Length: 205
Image 1 (cartoon, rainbow, N blue to C red):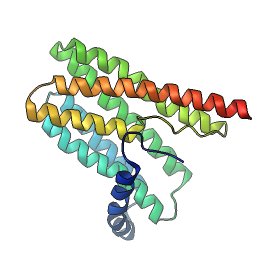
Image 2 (cartoon, one colour):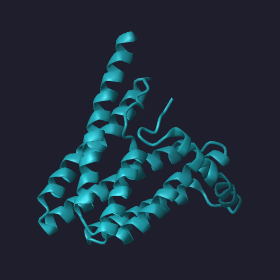
Image 3 (cartoon, rainbow, N blue to C red):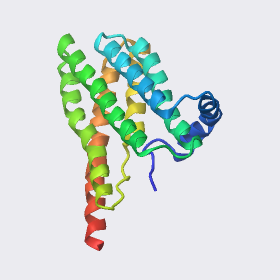
């Protein structure tokens, strides 16, 4: 069973349950899950631009809206009968685009402001953040589940949002740097745990 890492499963379930009435209404209006996925990507891209421009609170507001859309598309897919194979593909691809935009914007911010700690942390976090879902996808192609670890995508996004909020409210960019470091460390742990889980599962046959 998939878990949500450091995000409590009960909180994740409550969020999805709270969005269900909105999803039902949007579905009734003819709004598709794919349309909401596209909206979520556009909002995340806009938020990434704001991160790169050193505007944490504005970025936080836009990215929060994007994260709602990112959850809502799945809710619409469920109320419409479970979604489609292309919808699942589009959602996964959109997540990778969003992740690349956010961490790429962080790399830009670190380079443009001369913040070497932020730059290095983002450069380390980026490949690790991509390896986590890659291991899961590759494992599933082999018929093995790989959902363990503290930092699936929703957990990594939550850490980034908390870091942005702390940065925006305190005026201290080190809060955001700390969040990026946390993402890198937890993604590395998650990657290692998933590789180990796949190895054990394949060894059992």
